[in-house]
Image 1 (tube, one colour):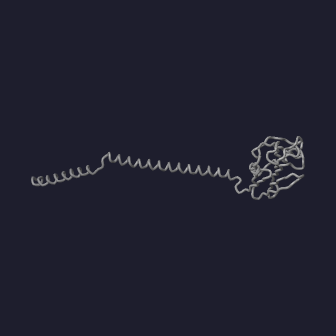
Image 2 (tube, rainbow, N blue to C red):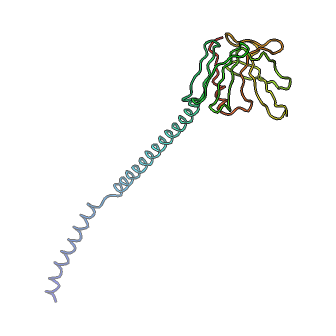
Image 3 (cartoon, one colour):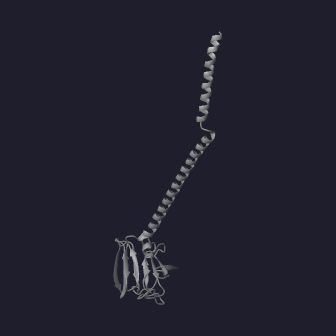
Length: 217
């Protein structure tokens, strides 16, 4: 028994020593709490920075889309007459734009010049009569209102059909000659200048009228 105990003691001592050595090396190799925390912080910062970058990219894309939409809307408004033709009359000092499929013709009546701007089907029109036509006055069954045309302020006469329910024709008449060779109406309203158009203007006719511009005073 004494010999057996003597042989066991060295084995126990060896195992104890090995355990101590493993414990020491394990402690030395195991990362400290500070290192774990530091690495966790770095990873968190990476995530925060990545999210910030994504947010900035989304904001940039949003601004780009907003600018694109704004530019598109602006261009659409500016290009309302894109591709249209411009008619210029040197004698009477004005210009007017119209769609390509519309025509412009010039005629005379009672020695007065008339410029006819008409659609291809002749259903829509604008007549420019700087010297008047037929030497006629204004009918009594009409209503007048102020208007703007060619950066000036003519009187807008609204003429009614016989049933008094639907406006038939509108005249824009300048009380004073707005440009060279234009004729002002007399006291009875006869012989005066005017621009005629349907009272119930289509969007096309409204746009054409908005392009009417005097080039000479």
